[in-house]
Length: 114
Image (cartoon, rainbow, N blue to C red; front, side, top):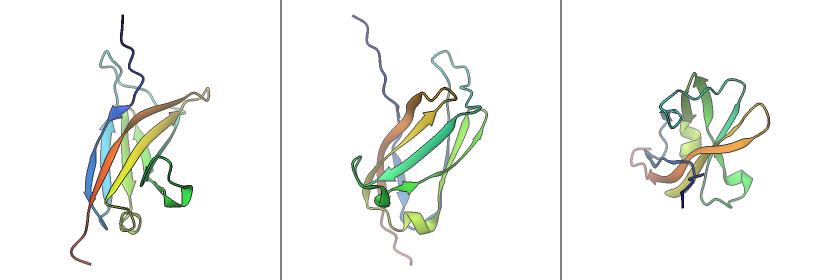
């Protein structure tokens, strides 16, 4: 029997509350070829739990250069995040197909200097 994995890449984020967050992920297919996101829409959010209501969400700013996806959250957003949360990133391609490409736990360390 073959195993087919249809789960996103597990990416854990550990960051400081109240800081600007910025990171990049590089996406390739199983053969190591760059994934082309041309025409696709990406949406990534942090929530306390997967079922938390929309107002509790922090939405990343996203920019794409070839297969490199850059994510960012401003200090005003990260200051309000809980110490334990979850995140994921979904891609909607030009045909409307939705695929979650990354996600995982978020650990927010409380800031000391304010």
